[in-house]
Amino acid sequence: MDRRTYLILFIGALASIHQTSAGWNPEQPPNWTVGYYCSDLSSSSRVCFTTDVDVSKPKAGSNFEGMLSADGKSFVIYAGRDEAALLLLDDFTIRTKFDVPGSDESQRCADGSVALSSGRLIDTTTFCNGTSYWLHVPAIPK
Image (cartoon, rainbow, N blue to C red):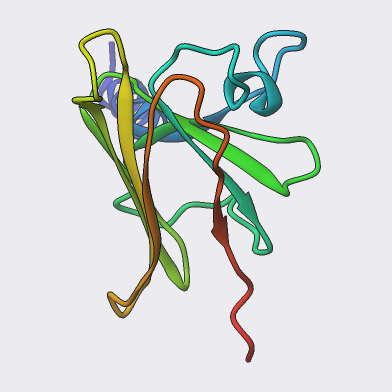
């Protein structure tokens, strides 16, 4: 293998590693949708959001696994390989922490927060099985 071919393969491998560390997975109805994941039918450890901003292009440094609705108005971040997730946007920092203890041992919970990039907290809550609360990412008036 010549040096140029090796370099192309190496760069491709690095690009694929970066893509798996931060990204949106496609919805696959009926059970792999934002609506299903965020319903009380789902027992997965997840945090659900509604949004008024475009979250489809996370900034560098993001590390999360999630699903964005087809209309871009809602999304879910769920437990993947890491026990915490980070979604960096132009104006917001969204953090989640999974495997948070619930009120009893059977609950699978996750903490979620939305903050401005300046650090000012907008909203935070703990999501457990059956939680129907959604955090909101608002538009910032310019």
